[in-house]
Length: 192
Ligand code: ITT
Image (cartoon, rainbow, N blue to C red; front, side, top):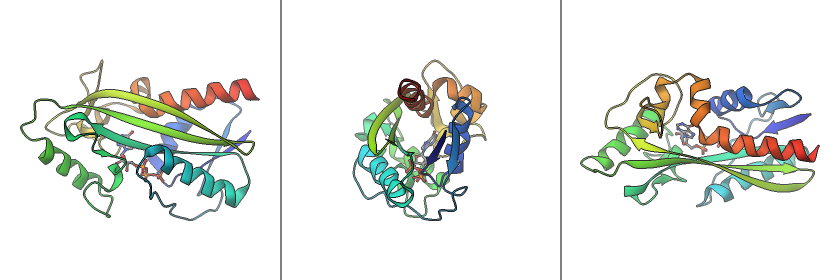
């Protein structure tokens, strides 16, 4: 079964492919020959995920899914949240985003945070949403060189390592993205 994954983020593709079971062929936008930067104009993860999947569904008429993820820091009232990719500006620079986050959190004793992923699946012309949350905290100095985005400063609950110090398999034990994807896979198992 073929499922288009409406993303331009190769890190997300690698993580999703590593948790998908046999029988599902994940086709990326690149594989499908689609070269567009899908806009994310909305102020919720849900609405942006819907925008991405419905844009690709309109173009291809095929079953597809997208996901939008945000890092929600409690003492910053949920920021960077839906603006996670562009927190420090339109350049979408991972390092600049981390630097801004650490400056904004300087001196804060509550460093609790969560990653939240919302997947929008369009399956047989109907939309389904799935959410995955990973709770943890933000450390004050970056650690590790793996992963992407805010991984070097995020330590999930139950671990003393940042996501950037983990292999993809270890990150998958905790990750928001894997939890949301597990729900999508369970749905497909019931629906096929
Ligand atoms: P697509 O919209 O093409 O899927 P994107 O990179 O724009 O890719 P998002 O809008 O969901 O995706 O990006 C949110 C940002 O949040 C992303 O650029 C990273 O900085 C960060 N992020 C998302 N998932 C993350 C993860 O698992 N670990 C660390 N940071 C993450």
